[in-house]
Length: 422
Figure 1: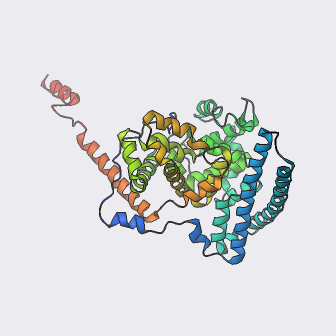
Figure 2: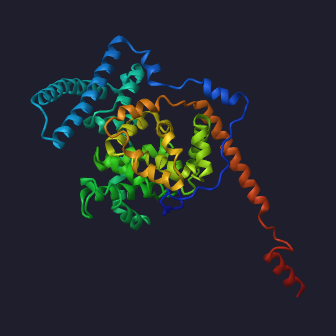
């Protein structure tokens, strides 16, 4: 990535800041709203219908594994919380664990084959690969699969990494200040001298040097932190560079944050179209979309959900991009619409902080399922992007027109006039 001339270190917490006032997207009574309703919605079932019987059987096994994992975790919580478990419950738990171990072995073999035969899977088995990723990439395969998904396995910038660490960055103090707030409860990042904090500082500093326009922005450290939980710092650096280049993240983290404004604009349209009553309630309470959704886009739910759930969303993001953020965000609003409609602005703020993050702790599969029941029309999103760009361009033109001209009514103009008269 070519280094740019200006260095930027964004100070404000971006998801807490107030975005520039923007016109909300409006639903017109013409065919455009019908277009959104009639467009294909890319649900998992539509992809599954095109799979072979063997592939469907494989997906069924993975669903069974996820079910057993959930049942096993519930069983363990139950046993830890009470000593009144009967012998039969222990036997059933042992049986579930035995079945799970067989399925885990099959999963290891499958994902090992996928990693070794990556190009063939991308070319010939794309639908199945998409379904498998939506089911969750096994923890031990995330490092290699994430690198493969974003084509970060052989990047020239990796050779620059050690040299970048020897250089100084104008953003170093800001990075040092913020890394202690990144996953403060996670063992890897605990303590000022922890290995996690040190490698997180290294990656953030290196990126601030290769992309001086963006420099460092709060929020990006959560993404890098997640990468470092899976892979060494050099690989994490390469993946982050690729995400910034190819996944719209660089535009999100630029000082102007124009891309964040676009995402909020698009999300508001989906909210207005699919949950009109909730949208009206939000407006009546002055509960702006940027107040709850900015962090969703800037940290990809890493500051919203516990890591096991957030990582499942991140798996999908690595293959399908920001679409999953729109889907999950609207799914959360759909699930909680009734409760949110009863709350005022303060109540909704508390609800978003305390209730929503833990609703899918034990069942991330349900969150993914609900996300793919959300209507999402790529063509409509593209149209909204053009609409937003035209709107911002017009705003810029109007701002230029209303700037005081140098003349009799401006202080500069009057000073010039007096000087001439004297």
